Image (tube, rainbow, N blue to C red):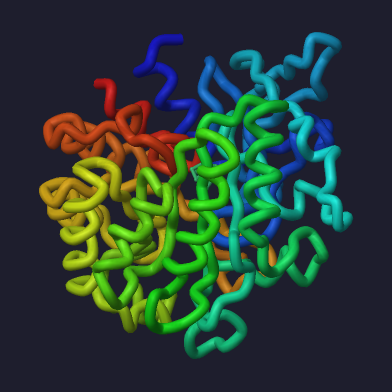
Length: 366
Ligand code: SF4
């Protein structure tokens, strides 16, 4: 399969989701947590992508994967017609370990995609839990309530797990996100402590993710502490959509984000600052492309991913955008990124580099 013919199945699979003959195949699927979830990592034609497996769309998807054979390969079928062979990244070895105080490593950080260690340093958020302020797509409290994680991962715990994940499973970079703990640094301080401890233990590129802090000096502090890249996630780009879907987070306005992006790029460099945009929440294609143009001009990588509803959230019955809508957005966006000199492969760490939640990087190569 060449790159162009790879785009289509990647985009289609991410929009429709996948039915699994054997739900236990490969590493456990993500359920709940911050950001996109209810996915499973699938490797197709050498690329690992996160594919919805628990959403209502996935349960009626035309795509199905057979149970893996002895060689670990599954047959990907579209309405019973075999398309190609796929594999599922294996359960990482570090998942079997626990800290001296008895916390399983998988409750501290998990494997995302093929080679990314991801953690939510603080599993609670000042905006969560109240309908008037919470982000309707987010399930940060679900995995905590379900006992699948712990609330505060200490710097020591993160360092211990990161070291093991590098040594045992060869992870290549790390994503550190956080619930928003306050209205001032908005998580930057705990990310500094965490990045510092991980970097002291192991040489692992780190992307920190938080809302824009109130003081731009936090960008320098994050960099000095060991963050190589920074994500500040707009999620949606139209003020009305932001106010409807994420009423609390929308109080940090788009102009405030743009100022923060400008300040952060001065510290981290062009292409090392990124933002997540969930397509399917109500923004038009034109609005996402217009915002992306501004972001690229600032040196910010707009990581546009198809929205996937998460069970237990207010948006659980919303549908993902269809593959044609995704292609119509990702094709021009891929071209804009190439022309603007920003590429997924050049990012040092984080979601844009991992690329598993969107087929965007497949469109950068055209
Ligand atoms: S793109 Fe980000 S959220 Fe998605 S799997 Fe990769 S690291 Fe995780």
